[in-house]
Image 1 (cartoon, each protein chain N blue to C red):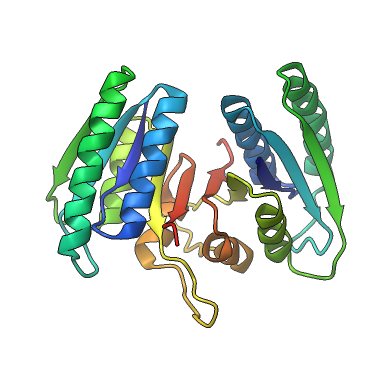
Image 2: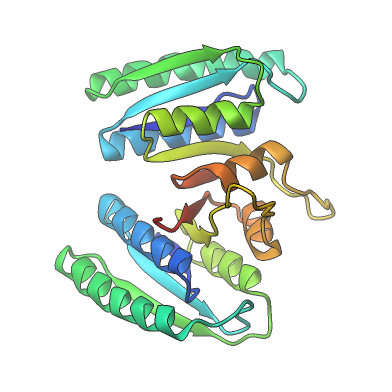
Amino acid sequence: MAIVVGYIPTKEGRAALNWAAQECLLRKTSLIVINSQRGGGSFDADEALRFEEELKRIASELEEAGVSSEVRQLVRGVEPSEDLVAVAQEEKAEVIVIGLRRRTPVGKLILGSNAQRILLDASCPVVAVKAED
Amino acid sequence: MAIVVGYIPTKEGRAALNWAAQECLLRKTSLIVINSQRGGGSFDADEALRFEEELKRIASELEEAGVSSEVRQLVRGVEPSEDLVAVAQEEKAEVIVIGLRRRTPVGKLILGSNAQRILLDASCPVVAVKAED
């Protein structure tokens, strides 16, 4: 049993990582961070750096609590949604955690296709997390 | 702090209720079940009955663990998504839990508008739960 979180170098990605780590501590379950190489969306180098730092902090926090974590870099030529759902199934994940953008008051934001596919295709619960303001 | 779950008389609705209750036990936080009267979708009397039974069982389980629960019937002339997001905000909810239909292998299921609005509008994390097979 594990919690699976998708890596995206955005503040939503970091929010998802943080929520997933807290849930791992609560559930005493391991964390699997999926870095799917057909990443989609723009790459934010600053956020990627912050993500790496956050990941280090979280890995040692989890280790101290006796909970394991791992990062998997996947380059399988499939959409990130497929990678996430497949790993969650293989690992019998308790939940998948993903980051979602916050809707602006005037914004007609719709859910991205990756998020929709994860929400619809996953057999385990999916947690959609927003970034802090 | 609380966990807010939307009431729908379907097996997905019951799955959401059960997940929410387990999460309340983990987080030692109260459960708020929202029964929004502009319900949308077909009403399943059998599932409604099972939901009531499940709710009773869960309420006593939570009470035994020292966690409170309540059911709120809302008739405010707004969409269920608005009720859920508003209550979650008022109560500074930790998460909102909703039920989602499982996609069939041939089904081109898309996310319902209520689910999409909750996912996009909520400021707290939203957990989407599927029914057991």
